[in-house]
Image 1: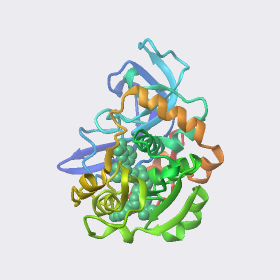
Image 2: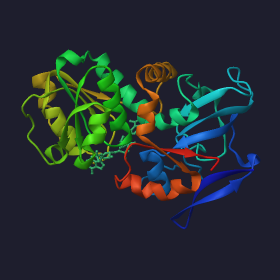
Image 3: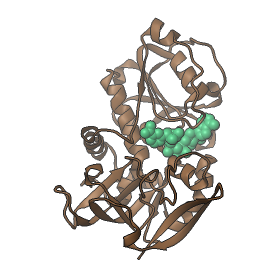
Amino acid sequence: MFKAILIDKQDERQRVALTTLDESQLPDGDVTVRVECSTLNYKDALAITGKGPVVRQFPMVPGIDLAGTVEQSSHDDYAPGDAVLLNGWGVGEQHWGGLAGRARLEGRWLIPHPEAFTPRQSMAIGTAGYTAMLSVMALERQGVTPEHGEVLVTGASGGVGSYAIALLARLGYMVVASTGRLEEAEYLEGLGAREVIDRRELSEPGRPMARERWAGVIDSVGSHTLANALAATRYGGTVAACGLAQGMDLPASVAPFILRGVTLAGVDSVMRPREDRLEAWRRLGELLVPEQLDAITRTIGLEDAIGEADALLAGRIRGRLVVDVTR
Ligand code: NDP
């Protein structure tokens, strides 16, 4: 028996509760994992609150990330006792996820747990940090280097934003952080931001082209913010789009693409091929320092995760929430 958060839907009403499950109730898969830690991502909060169409079938155990130890395996690459990590692949959306004491998964979704981190640390990073790393890699692959100039990070005090700032700063980029929480300026500067700007400068409808400022952008916000970021990206610059905290729309023009050769690079973490996952986690291990992880992390229990989901969607959570599933 193990504890789990379970989301169910009856008569169009979603219910979510902390419950106790039996291993025989777990879905099919070739690896059973004893989960140690999970985390609360934006997507998990949408699933738990029912405020976004994340859950594709009910009942569902949410949790798109997990770190734990293999208990049983019929997959060639994994044996009992192996430390493993999972991000995405539709887990927590269409396959039971990490906000539970046990998970049964496809071995091909797993990667060996990165040696650089403890499970608590890897979950402090979670999909947010892994997506931030993929976004940095997207800028690098388009040739954006620190010498090119300022890089804008939007949604700065959120999970993806916080990690994007830390990673870019560590790599020597000059980071400008856009936030709606100017009172968090000290926190953002502590992560490595050179300048903190009010997100209202970017969140209203703007012109198709603006003064060239950004060599690169990591945008977790979408909508007018992404449009304005594109409009102010310098000749040949790249914008990595990974989120939609402001909105899913993109009210922009083609002007930055055809007049300034700007690249809009989409970043998906969920279905990402294994090689990119391994590279992203290897580089996270090289670039992040444990003290930084501690500074942006708070640990909560399974039951707390239900209540914190609303706060996360309301933008009241700074940094990352690790869920200790044994609590
Ligand atoms: P968080 O909730 O931790 O952070 C989002 C941040 O966006 C907030 O902290 C806030 O930052 C800002 N924000 C919130 N609402 C608005 C608004 N209305 N207008 C402008 N800014 C706003 O979420 P995550 O960092 O975990 O995720 C960020 C986004 O990235 C989400 O949309 C998520 O779905 C997406 N995502 C995508 C992935 C992918 O694979 N492509 C993977 C992971 C996440 P501040 O207070 O500093 O302004």
